[in-house]
Amino acid sequence: MSEKERAEIFKTTADAARQLVGTTSGQEIIPREVVSDALVNRLVEDGVLPGLDAAIEEYGKLSEQEPDDDEVAAAAAAQQAQQTLPGQKQPTADAAPRTLYVRRDVLNRAEIIRWAKEQGFTDIVPDLHVTIAYSRTPVDWFEMGESWSPRLEISAGGPRQMEGMGPDGKYKALLITASELIWRHREFIEKGASWDWPEYQPHISIQIGGDIDLTKVAPYRGKIILGPEIFEDLRED
Image (cartoon, rainbow, N blue to C red; front, side, top):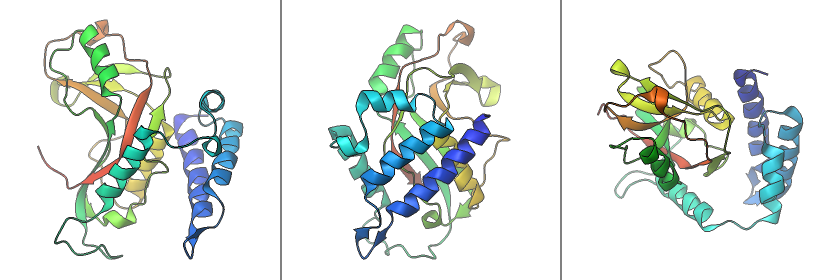
């Protein structure tokens, strides 16, 4: 299947799983662990997340685990990001539309910085992240839905590439891919968000500017751990 087909299947399956985990009178319709195990089986059968079965064998299923410190911290950050600031009105179903910028920060930043320095980068971006939405068109944030998980781990390997992006290729970026990122971006677009470029390519900007020959840079091939989605107003800078 193409990456687009994988993303569409992943989105449809994940959306259905979210509905099953929904609550009635404060009680889950179906326990989250049960839905998680069924979702894993379906995704393995569909082949939309290569390497998922091996990862599950190594780390175990959700029903076999307790959340670790990173997951607890990521969940707390996601909850804090969704809360209103002091003095603001509580969110409503018809919240005023606003421009939207959504990112996921890299949690294992130290590993990527170590690789970047070994490859000759000298002015590394301080807040390594992946951008998911960049909408100049105002949208209702509360209509944008939410990610399946506040913590996304992209396994080592897979397609990785270094490329110059933006004006004159000044953004030295590590191109990556993950079905979760692609279908979430598509979900934002379907719900009215705009996007300034012809297509969406998940990437992590490593350095802005600088004189470095990307043809001599070996892409980072280790695992990438991303935190929760952070919603912000769009800033032109």
